[in-house]
Length: 232
Image (tube, rainbow, N blue to C red):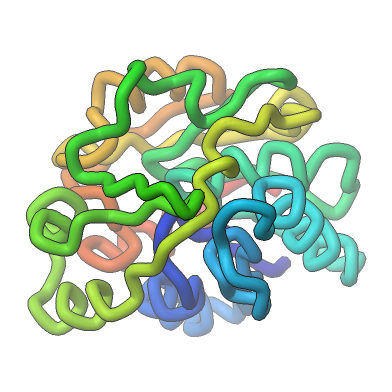
């Protein structure tokens, strides 16, 4: 079995965010990877108006999953759940979807379907067609329970992302056909736990962890043990 981690919005270097949990998985003989998301500028094309968006992210992750017949568990974080829900559809090698503080849109829904009429106060949307997390509030919103080293390195990995990725609808909902688990982060200051619990009702089962938005950093062993225990 392999694990494929799909990171959230406005960051780069998914392998770094996942590395602590990956280390525990390696101890159990499980390899993991983290494909880049084009809308975050990770494949060379700059984000923004006319830049890479949700379909490009879906295509990148789907190609990564399809490149091997080895059974896979997909761990989707935050915006990553929007990407994974379409990218994994119809791929027999994907045996389980683990959503972490994430979103499970139906076909035709987008990330924006779950928000209000205005951007969240921790986001900065600009006229160049990009958005990002406001650096001055990023730590207390998303990493308040992480080690200081991880906070500083995480802040260095904040990026601008193509804003249209949040409004484009997905074309499939893999969680309707693939077994899924939702991990609610009960101390998340970014994605409200109440919203997470509502999303979790769409998954096959739901669990909660006493952690902020990035439990694979702050509670990495617990997350790895959860992954190792998933039915595949």
